[in-house]
Image (cartoon, rainbow, N blue to C red; front, side, top):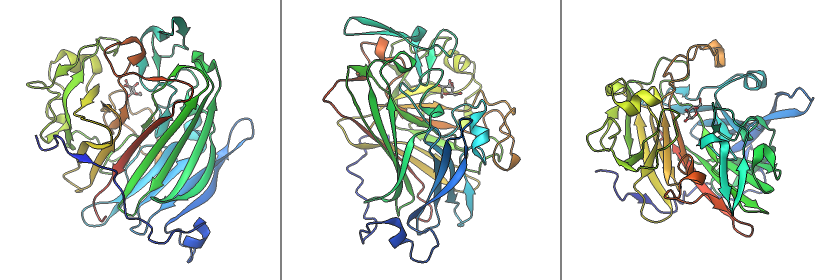
Length: 386
Ligand code: GLA
């Protein structure tokens, strides 16, 4: 298995050789290269201003992030011949995000993915959460981290231009215990990596699972389905689900199943097989158990679009990866440039702890205690032209 044991230690990118105290100093020509440009993105119904932070590197790669939901709004990367496309689904303006949409580009939390029946027990106390997915809680509840305005500041990190977003999730919000301070920092490296650093502390014991919910189409957003994209996932096991998409608790081998992505295979090659897991998910909507030994960044997945030659690698410090193939997209949403987002017109690779961990004693713990610090990093890397 090509990926096995492949750990990228530290991923220390030799980035900006000169450390500058401000982005303006980097942006000497006013071109926005190696800088974060701040623009208005719209206003909340309350009148609150929401901004768009555009990070650009010297290779022309550009990532735009909004303070609403700390969402990735656009991500422009080159194909094999240097042609740029925006490879994430989303909207041109804030208004689109304020309407119902399936977490496009968002930071989801306090608990990404599902918690069965919207309840869990911690330190002997039972907590009841907002239920927003049948009887279950999904992606933080009715008003998760995707639907709040974060406090954003442009930064210039050792990795490159960035934006730091902070949110205080109050004790009891959506039913979760503890005041939770979360910081998410996006930075764009010189090697065409969008790096996401997560940092959180709580003043009470709580549970936490934050991730990014970008929808990728390497042919460009709105340019057809992703069934011919070729995927490799560094996982010998996955967590099978029941009809409600809640893990059964089993860690099942991928061997001999449509979940074996240890060698590169097209997303569409097996997606409609009469496999019960695929039927439950209406395609892929499953958590993969990454082949991890120790901490640090691990190459979790690689995706290639054979037509354009665009490649994306996902590296993470997390134990799991939710691979979701946009099965619930149905053409009802018109996104950037009026593009129609049809079924399976994008895929998500949500790096995470396993779904429903608060109720699954055998899954890695998601408990954060006062005095501890939650830290995680995920990198979406686009090697073309890097
Ligand atoms: C996650 C879930 C999916 C779906 C999407 C949002 O990926 O696992 O079932 O809810 O979010 O539509």
